[in-house]
Length: 397
Image 1 (cartoon, helix red, strand yellow):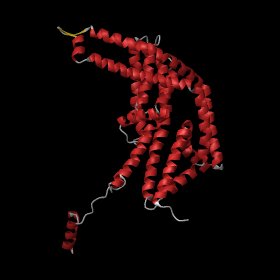
Image 2: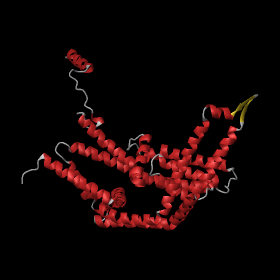
Image 3: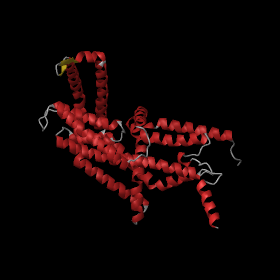
Image 4: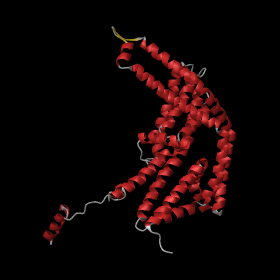
C-alpha cells in the first residue's frame, strides 16, 4: 500500500487524540487506581529486578513474591497501629472543626487585649492602639487570621477525607494492587516499547538523555517522598507522644501523608498538631495552653528544619530543580484539576513539563538541545603557552 501523506497522518492523529480525550473523560473515575498502580509498579521495579537476578524464580513469580510481602507488611501494620491511627484520625476529623471557632475567638481576644495595653520603656509609655491605627495592624491581623483559618480548615478537610474514605480507600488499594501486579510483570516490555518509539533516526542520543532525566525526576520524587513520609510520620508520632499531645499517632499519620504535598503539606501537618495542642484539656508539663502550643510548634519546626537541611538533600536531592513558589502554585493547580492525586503529582509533572519544554524551546532556537552541551568556540589560533613551548624547543634544537 502507498505511504500516507501529511494530510492523512494529521487526520488520523487528530482522530486518535479526540478518541483518547473522550475515553479519559468517560472513564475518569478509573484514572486514580491506574495512576496509583503505575506508580507502585515503578517504585517496586528496582527491587523486583534485584530479586529476579538473584533467584531462580521467573519474573512473574518474583512479582507475586514481592507483592505478597508488601501485603503482609501493610496488613501487619494495619493490625498493629492502623486501626488505632484510623480511630485517632476520626477523632481529629471531629475535633478540628470544633477547635477552630475557639482558636479564632482566642486570637481576637488576644488582639483586643493588646490594643488596650501599653509598652513601658523607662519613663516612656507607648500606647498600642495608635500603632494599630497607624500601620493598619488590625487589617494585617485579620489577614493573618484568615490565612491561619484557611490552613487549619484545609488540614481538617484532609483529615476528614482521610477518615471518611478509609473503607473506599481499601477497595481502591486492592484494585491498584491487582493492576500494579500486571504492570510490574510486563514492565520490561513497556520499557522496550518506549525505547523503540524513541529511537528515531538522528534522535537516539537526545531520547536517551531525556529518558534518563525523566527517570531521575520521578525516581527521586516518588521513592524519596515515600521514605520521607515514613520517616516524618514515625518521628512526629514519637515526638508528640513524648510531649503528651492528644491523638499523637493520628497526627503522625497525617504529617506523613502530608509529606506528599510539597511545601503546603508540612504546614498543614504542623498546623493541625499545634491546634490540637492549644485546646487539649491539659498537658504533662503543666504549661499554659499558649506556651504548650508554642512548644509543639517549635518541635514541629525543628523536625521540618532537620528534614529540609539533612534528609531532603540526601534522599530527593535537586532532581526536580523547582523553586518553592513554582511547587506551591503547581500543587494548587493540581488540586483544582485532579484533587488530592493531582496535588501529590503536581511537582514531578511540572518538572517533566519544564524538561520537555526546555528541549523544544532550544530546538526551535537552533541551540544545542541541552544547556550543558553548549558548543565551545573553536580556537583558530594557537594559545600563547603553546607558541612559547614551540619557541623553546627551536632554541634547544
